Image (cartoon, rainbow, N blue to C red; front, side, top):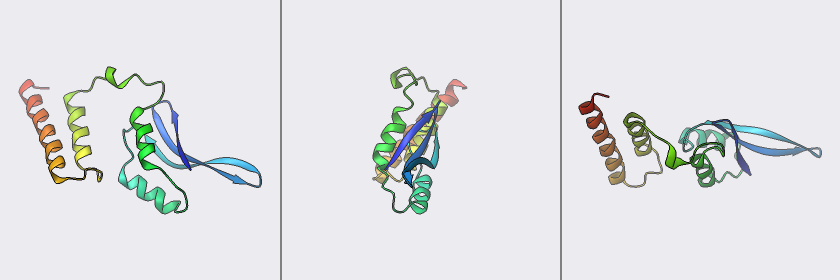
Length: 121
């Protein structure tokens, strides 16, 4: 079973292995400070550790919540540019199941780009 450990604002995916009665933790992947686990990281972990169960949905929930020391999401202020980038990332995630949702996310990012251009930011 894998779990997430936070060190400051960076997360790591780890598992505990037992050898001759002793336990040690093995780093599966450094996850950084994103809000979800990228597909290439999932594929790499699955390829390197095929017998290990990873509940990716739960890992994404933990990553999305952020570290315990982080401010609540309602207090986080993002710039138009940061929101645009996140929208484009979400549109290109394999978890976006419908082409229409992808178009809507990309359209929303385009609207923010237009707003930024008008405001000169």
